[in-house]
Image (tube, rainbow, N blue to C red; front, side, top):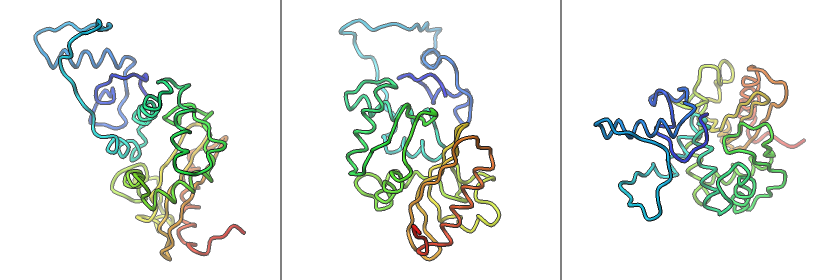
Amino acid sequence: MPDVTALQVDGDRDDPSRQSSSRSADPVGRAGAAFAAALGGGVSVSVGTAPAGAEQLAAARSQPVSVLIGQSLIVSDNTLAEMLARLVAVESGAGNTFGALQESVVAALDAYGIDTTGIIIRDGSGLSDDNAVPPSYLTRLFVKINARDGDLGVIFDGLPIAGGPTGSLSYSDRFTGDNAVADGAVFAKTGWIDTGYTLSGIIRAADGTPLTFAVYALGDVSDNAKQALDTITAGFFRCGDNLSNS
């Protein structure tokens, strides 16, 4: 993760071609250096505030938000997720800080008609231990995502797929061995911090039943929690319509 700034080039990666590339401690300075290099001729760039009424010299636009969402989901790009959350806060009028996210994100989620009680948003990347999203909320939200309600199909299209060609469920340590039975049938978002592993999304079960699920392994977890999540998810796939709350 780089510093949270409104100005970055290529996600502030040392190597823009690698999703897992290290970032710098000065994304704005690096963006200025990239700008100077593009202009050529030994241009000097410094950080400052434009005077009132300054003429705009040029403008650049990112990909549409729908594209950025997919890019964020497929490989868990924390920087991009943080930026998208800040956009929600800015657009809502709540501000542009970490503190603005609780009000703005929860208000945005309210629009889907699902009870948001218990949701705590401390950052947009999900890296804070203080974030809290009830698994029941996610299972209900994924019902709407599966139905492509409103614009939610964008989220479905960006989800990693077990055994897929790309994304965080295509890695060599996910859905291996007996769990490979669910390859191509699990569309889910992965999550990992030092105090938890999570997996939530949609399953096209073996008997054709569509299922939504959210499984959390929280606390003093180790890397094998990923395989445990895959195992229970593969079990959901096998059970299909036989699953019950009993």
